[in-house]
Amino acid sequence: MTTYSLLTADRVVDARGGPPIERGAVLIHDSEIVSVGPAHEVRAPDGASVNHHHYPGASILPGMVDCHTHNNGFGDGRNGEDLAALEDEILTVQAAGNARRSLFSGVTTIRENGPKNMTMFRLRDAINEGLVIGPRMMLCGRPVSIIGGHMGYFGGEVTGTQQCRAFTRQLIKEGGDYIKITATGGSTPSSFPLRPAFNLDELQAVTDEAHKFGMLTATHSTSTQGVINSLDAEVDMIIHCTYNEPDGEVNFRTDVAERIGEQGAYVNPTLQVGRARVWSLIQKGRKSGLTDQERIGLDEAKRELDVRLDHNRRMIEMGVKVITGSDSSWGDYQLGNTVYEAELLVHAGYSHMQGLMSVTSRAAEALGVNNIVGTLEPGKQADILVVNGDPSNDVNDLWNVADVFFKGEKVERGSEESLAAVRQQPEEINLGSQHSHGG
Image (tube, rainbow, N blue to C red; front, side, top):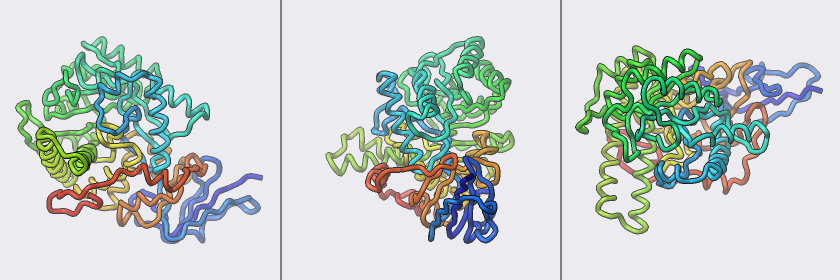
């Protein structure tokens, strides 16, 4: 006899943009959603066996989609060079733990933004073999970097248009779902974060090759010219999207932001990784004190966070498509804490419902997987999150996970103690005129 699963709760938030469905229900068969609507209208076929899960006081919504993860990372402050020095096998094991924590937190789809070598492809193989569990994965393989460029230590350094095209083809051959490019330098010491990395013809060679095979592209960009070059190369997503001049001057460029909106590129601002650094330094100062350099770094991190929030507020007001991508576990930001990024987008100007959509339907659109996940609709995969409360009214209710369903199956998530231990503890900091929940 065919078995269905019926989920009912105080409300269903389908993330399609309308109001929640009060006293709603979702019917699942195998890995797919069959129907969504008011509980009195959603029924399994006559005679079918039904597993009924009822959640009073809760909301049913799509599983979260995190557009920017680093599963090789530890989120303990170590840098990329430290990760690259570890053996691939160690990084694959670490990635497996991170993937499990993501899924348990309600993130059912991730986009990985740059691991070492083949580590994430091997993890996906292990998940497909049923050896470990983890979310749905959109993988890039190694990020495409110039020699000495940001993240080049992960194995993807190229020079010239021919190597750019050849390496893009190699990544697709290895199983890449999209292409990640470091269009500027970053935290890598040998790189230049305020200047473009690739020449425009090299950048265009990568995007042309990717688009030819139907692949999306994303660029790491921490300078204004890097953003402009990304737009000239018709990149699909701009990561960080900071407005920095070569001399370090911060200058929000309305004309560049308008171009982003006109071209329809998505922006993944990665705000929480900066706040996580602030929290980490505050906590270290309380435990053991800070060096003079660390105190300077703390002040700089606070100032940068305020600037980034202001710039994203302006882009949101201009209608730029800003979405949630956590950038964890990079720096001090650990996987399993994606909600903090969505909360900061609310602080930057989104409504709570828009913040929720930034980590569900809008994020799925940004990754090109909105035909299978991101909203609760018949025919889509039954990747479902159940939380106590109403995250369409307070995005922080996304922390209150009751259950996670992945491909229609309820995920066994372990003890409440182990789940609670994944959440990083916030520190109260002043983020300008608006109130920041939990920080």
